[in-house]
Length: 589
Image (cartoon, rainbow, N blue to C red; front, side, top):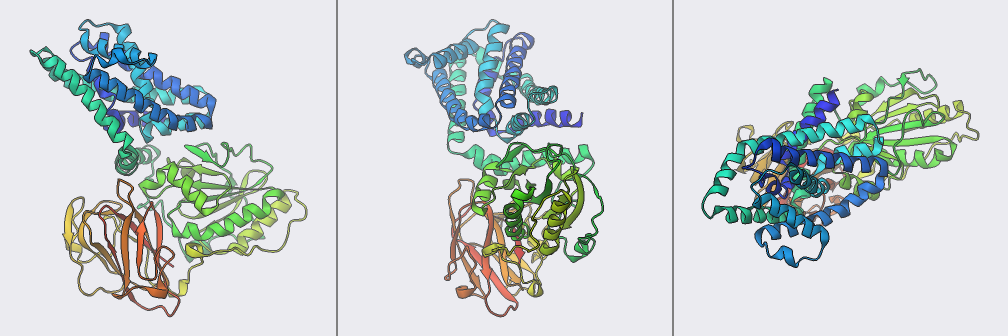
């Protein structure tokens, strides 16, 4: 029931998606006509089209998700042609494509025929839905992918209908509120043709925005951070928990206190049954897996997110276990639960998995449904289930890899596996995945966004959600940090607004990392790193040259400092030579 409510509210939020721009002209072309005889059939046609597309996704599976990418560009072509026919009616007569010609006639009927025709309005709604469905952004994509993974069922149909009802509600409100204005303009002398051309121009502007990648650039960061953030807040309220990474329910490596509470291998009590795994919005490297289908296998569930340094440092061990024990009955499942908005982008996760060499199944847990089913609170978190589907051991955070591997061996033997090796793997960890020197780490993980920021100086100068000019103090105490130049500090990130913007941090650790992302246009952002005012030299990280130069090319964690000598208090500075970079969090090792 709550999921249906959430789907409905998610549909309502589609009104703020940039991808709605190309279809608004079709919708508003029906203004000035009776709502029940014109606009209502149009919205009904759109809703049924959503249901049709979702049914196709449920039956077709993963190939439909792939096809949707091609359908997106085909839809853009159709929308552009429809927009041109609105601006240039004679162009429609010269087009030879039957579908485009039919669409042109539909759009002409929508704008030129003053008589309400429910049948024509319904067909326009179907055409509009076909064009909107491939490019409606991550909200609809989430629902469609969920339908594809869960298969055709009454539940998924109701979920989609709830979403469609929400989308229709927001559009109906827009029609009722704006209808009088459009109707008055269309009744004005000579205004009808200009309104028609204006609608066509609006469609072309929407096409240009999508073609330039603004829907994926801005939607994945702005809409995902705002609309998606609202969705996650709704999930939290409906489920009684907040999924916010800043709350008590989520944390990175919990440290030794939690590790001490873990059960020692050799005494493996039953901690509960393996929870359902059907909450993923998508599966990578595998078809959807279920707890029931995994009976007879030993299962390791790894909660991770790709910009988390603690998760990255456990990956060499998890990958080695997956490879070593696969043929003896071990199934490793990664559950990717995002911390930052950009980690909800499946394309980003897919690329990260390729770069990290992850070949085992990964469930995309953007809704935190699997996270909640496990009642999990940490990245990384490892849960070990036996062949009977019972959780027998867990471990939170980094370290104690030998104990975890012995648990795997014990559970495999209990399951009847023969020739289970007693030896332990020797993980090949390097770069950012190299184990930290925790004896030298005196700097904590530090978030740049104001929601969780600490030790920013001077604290009184921080200006949330607005562009401001900052000047760092000449001296910083250990673990203090500051900004220089023009920045807009949001809840989870700070975005530079001009060249030569800086971040400075007084730290004590062998390694310094910073989660960064390029601007909305995706262009690389050049930077220069200094340590105590000088080029890092041998202390440069894997993403920095010895002279301190580097560039932000994608949204991920960047290793900026790795010291080879003695570790002391140092002042780190990074200057971004181009505007638009986003900074999320410092981590140390």
